[in-house]
Structures are given as C-alpha cells and as structure tokens.
Length: 600
Image (cartoon, rainbow, N blue to C red):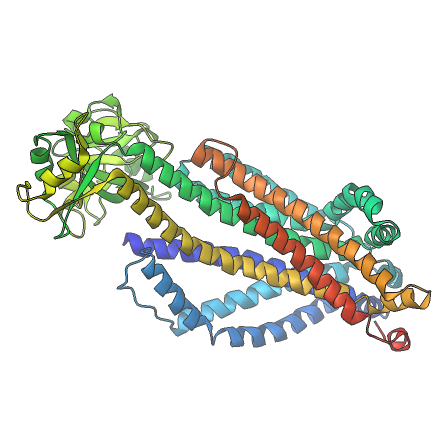
C-alpha cells in the first residue's frame, strides 16, 4: 500500500509541475506569436472586431492545434508511462509486481488536461490583444507597449505571497517533508516573476545597461535602445531563460540537499560497529538479546524499519460527529528495536520517560509527533499492514533534525511487515575489541545462529548512500522531463523573437549597417537576455533552496557539487546566445528588397 501511495504522490507532483510548466510554455509561445501578429490584431480591432471576437479567434486557433497535438501525444504516452514504471521498479521505489495499464479513462483524462491547459494559456495570451482599444490599435502595433494591468498584478502578488508562505512553512517542517513544500514554492516564485515579466525585464536592463555598454561600445548602445523600446519582446525572451535555469537549479539542488540530509542523519544516528543479517533473509527477534551477551559485544538491538500513521484521538473523533471534515492520520516512520541495546547502537536518546520500558504493547514517539500526548497514554496507531493498535506511550525521543521515528518493540513491528521477521541486528563492540575478530566469532562455526552475515559501519554507510543515489536518480528523471519542457519554451521563444525581426535587420542593412555589425548587436542582446534570465532564475533558486537547506541541513547553503550550477549556467548561456545568433544569421539571408516588400 505504501509503495502504491509513493507512485500516486510522485505522479501527482509530476503532473502538477508539468501542467504549470506547460501553461508557461504555451502562454509564452502564444504571447510572442500574438506580438508578431499585433498589426493584424490592431487592424481587426480598428475595423470593428470586439475583444470577445479576438479572444474567440485565438482560442479557436489554439484548440485546433491542441487537438492535433494531443492526438499525437496519445501514441507515445502509454509507452513512456510503461518505461517510467520500469525505471521506478528498478530503483526500488515501487514493487516490481505492479503492472502498467493504460486504459481509455487515463487517456481521456490526460487529453482533457492537455486541452484545458492549452486553452487556459491561450486565454491568458489573448487578453493583451483583445484589450487594445480601436483608437489606439495602430499605435499599439507599432510601439508594442505592455501595461501591467491590475489582474496580472493581483495574480503576481498572490503567487509571490504563496511563495513566501511556503518558504516559511518549509523552514519550520521536518526535513523529510521539506521537499513537498519547497517544490510548489519554486513554481509559485516562477509564476510570480513570470507575471511581472515586463517590469522585471526593465529592471534587469537598467542594472545591466552600463556594464554591457562599457564593454561592447556602439553595438551595446544599439542593443540597449532596442531593449528599452521593446520591453515586451525582451520579457518574452527573458522569462523562458528564467524558467529553465530557475527550475533546473532549484529542483536538482533540492534533490541533492535532501539526499545529503538523509545520509547525514543516517551516519549521525548509527553507532553500531557491525550489522548482522541472515542468508535466509530474516532473523528471530529474540536473537538480539542472545548476541548482546556474547563476549566482546557491548550491546545489540534488533532493527525493523517500517511506517504507519498516528490515528486521530478519541477526543478528535468525538468532535468530528459526522458534521465536519474527518480528521486524518499523521504519517510517521516506525522502527522496531530492542530496548536493551538501542541507546548503545544508535544516537537515539529518550527526552522523557525511559526506553527500557519499551516492552510489549508500548511505543516511544518522536517529540514532533508527541505534542498533546502524555506518558502512559494510549496512542491510536495504524501499522504498515493497516492494523489499528493502541500501544501505551512510555517515552519520547529526539527527532534528529526531522528524521526521527516512533519506536516499538521489534517483535511487534515485525509482525506487521511483509516478511514477519527482523531484517538486521545492530551490534556495538566493547571498547578495544577487534571488530574483525568479533565478526569471525559471530559468523563463524560457533555463531549464535547458522547463516549469519556481518557488515561493518563503512559498508552500511556506503550501502545507504547507494540506495539514496538510486532513489534520487528517479527524481532526476522527473526533473529532466520538466526542465525539458522549459528548454523547449526557451528555444521556441528565442527563435520566434529573433525571427520576426527580419524586416528590422533589413532596414539596418539599407542604412549602411554590415552583417557583422548586426550580428554584434544581436550578440549583446542575447547576452542581455541570458544574464537577465539567469539573474532571475538564480533568485528563484535561492528563494527555494535556502528555506529547504535550513530545514534539512540547518544551514543556508544547499548541498551538491558546484559543477551542477556551472553546468546549468553555461548551458543556458550557450543555448540562449547560440539560438539567437543562429536565427539572426538565417534572418539576414533575406534580400533587402524581399524583406521590405513582405508584410508583417
């Protein structure tokens, strides 16, 4: 059940992120397309077309294309889903027994979501063209002004306020769940900045104007004049750069930070010198007490990882009375242990009560989950197999930076797992004891149980790191798909924004500018676009990652190699400059007479 919930939660997160990114992609592409057709839209308004007619025209065009594109997506969609499920199973995120099935209902839901997303983005993009007043139509087409209307400002403020709220929540939640609030926070920051695109583009242009002009001379001056005269066009190119770099940096470092947080918590918590397992796959829960009495062994504890829920209390259920929303259980990690050795083999310590009383029908709750409960109270819980129990709370334990777990006797937890046995026993050696000799005694001919195997602390740390890396790889796969959408938006926007300037380039050629001068001007504009987008993207990443790192690592700097940041920055810069210059070079191939005679 837990594995299926993991799959559902991952699908929901990925689906939500894909929808939001798709809105950006489609809205940005349509916005640039409408800017290119602004003279056409202006003429339609001047001859009497109503705003509603203009919007309906854009929506109809988008619907026609979206239906065709959605039909094409239905062909590879099931195959991609089958491939993704296989990768999840290989990584151990979901059980291999799950079978991928793509019936007609998911196909209809997916196609409907795609159509609704495209039409929503088209409605957003069409509003600017439909708002133009007939008396200003032709002037609007020539100047391309972009006003920040109150609706756009309102939604921008709401998105930024949501980002601030989620950032505050992220700082104050457990490290294990910080990513669930940091990810939507990144999307809200991106959405808020995207809605403020023209204003932020002007601000970034003002900040970069003097440095670029000082380095690039006359070409930089022309580029700055173009940026100042066409802020809407610049914003249409800057926002995809921000989207791609901001999401890539935030989501990748989010995974590396969570990975290091989990690994650091594992290393800090482990005090055992050896961990015993069995070739048969399981151990009896009583074996830990016997191993604890072996020569050279300071302590031994069974270790059974699981998960479950803290159910609503009777008082909470009494308040429910069927009239309001039923209280939900709180998910909690559950670990089965041996009370005699848990404090010697791990860093777990009792804050109140005593772990020595952890026998029979008892539980020790982490401090974060024990609020409102008292020692001796019965705690309603649902185990991993769905069984509802009410153990007596005998202690509370520290949370280890949010990675704490509820402790119960190993035999109790093992009875509610799939195998029904103890998977491993933690062993702490006496001071001065040779661990190699102790390993030989516990696994050799005179072993307490035939078939025992032992692994050292270094081996356990390495195995934990490999497991975290495997599960993080799955997250990278989902991140790569989302960032891929953003890269498509980036390339589309840059090609459209540069390609539409064929007439402008030709006029510059006619007044004496050489191709080299035009290309140098476009190089400066591409650098301006890239630097502005990178600056805003890094701001999105900082606003997302600092609260997450505070919650997971208790520091402001996220974990992860600097090479990731360098790769993102270099890739975005190269993609932006390369796409812009390649499109400009192709546009310059048009003969001046042909460009002047063409219609916009």
